[in-house]
Image 1 (cartoon, rainbow, N blue to C red):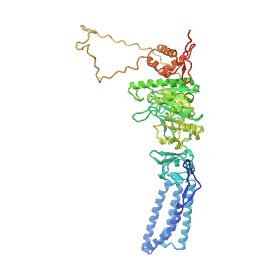
Image 2: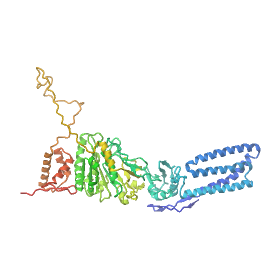
Image 3: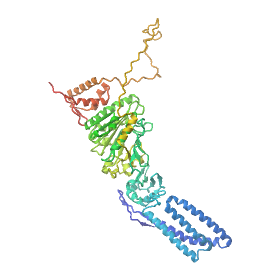
Length: 632
């Protein structure tokens, strides 16, 4: 027996209409119990209270039973809220006030029948009104909050929508969740498709509802709700999370909805079976708070010890704060320099791979002897759109201790090559203009769970979703918020860790005089050039296995002037051979011969584009055109 409700949610994409049915039997429980009380009281009076001796014990037993059951009902109904607690206790008291005298004196007198009719009407109407009000909106615990006590209305709402099995709702801080199991033949995706209807029944925003699939079942999942936005107030920056420590420790980007830290670890850890980030995408429309988040990330990186920070900005490098430029090892300002930087990174990857291989490491680890390298590229879309170098970097930087962080307003195919985007496994997505912008970055799993950054747009600056393989996947769809802080305070935090002063002065000290070792005293009768008598010069020298090996370094580095002549000669040879263009990635032989780094090559190519007779034209998309002098 059931009646139809007004709510008829459509099963989007499933070709059917689900009709909500509310059962009527709960409304009949109270009148049926009251009706059964009449024959029950007559039976108790007839068998236990006919004579004076048994009536005394019967009355005493009924009184004890009334007190005990009333206390039990009072305690058991407390988690259900004040209204339920009051109504259940009052109903128990009224029922026993009639049952005790009716059992002792008989229920058929006019006084007993009249009292029974009045109490039956009162209890039945009270239960029906409470039930109707709860179905319509939910319980109010007297403090103005809906979903009080054990938040059981979450389960009731899901049950009304789908008639499914659900576990007892669990409360974790401001979040309540319930495990849902769909009937055989139906999937949990049906529940995910009606999040708006669930939000309406619970009287919360649709963005407060999240559905999380079970990894081992298509029928089961978890529905969670956060009735009150825990991130609505701005969160002040707490300062660097690990000043003076390793980059291998977590970087805190902001605060998660559950009150924990929204953190990411850039290097990998083979012992923990965690891959390095390699490349991270930060996506958000103008005004969504990308810059504040990246400045927080830059401060975190700058205050670590075993990392080099490089900054590139294709459009607004002049607006970068001074503390960030000072803390960076290199700053590439403008589109040309940013593109040239990307092209030099290909050679840098090969160089670091060789260095790590010589040290016996398959990937960068803390204490490997090389600094980790972080490259933050602001306005990256102007640099990476159509640039084939970004595809190779996305596939190769992860294991060599390099991390590229790309900041852009959209991650669509026209802004970021598809092959590169498929290799980016870490995303920070702030408010975006359209849902297509979120689909290009966030995974389908996160979007189905309820992530909707296009609903924020730029109305909630600093709100973001964080997808990182080292983070619990259930948290991917949970909103986070970045910290807020003035540039003056950021500069003070970085200066304190790095030991800066307002006017840093180089500590000029006279060079120490070389220590002169005293000449050994000559012993009479001993020739220092004569080998010992017990050593045969013809025998090969055998090095014991347990003797520690002495590192010989990476090889001899040529002076800068000699290396520059070698680079110029190599480019001229390419021009004589008919080559019109050259890329930094094609100059690996020069780096091998000179022993210098990719950063030197980047600056050297820039120098060759300057002067009265430049050898190279300024780069276009990271490619240099060779300007061969006209033959005389």
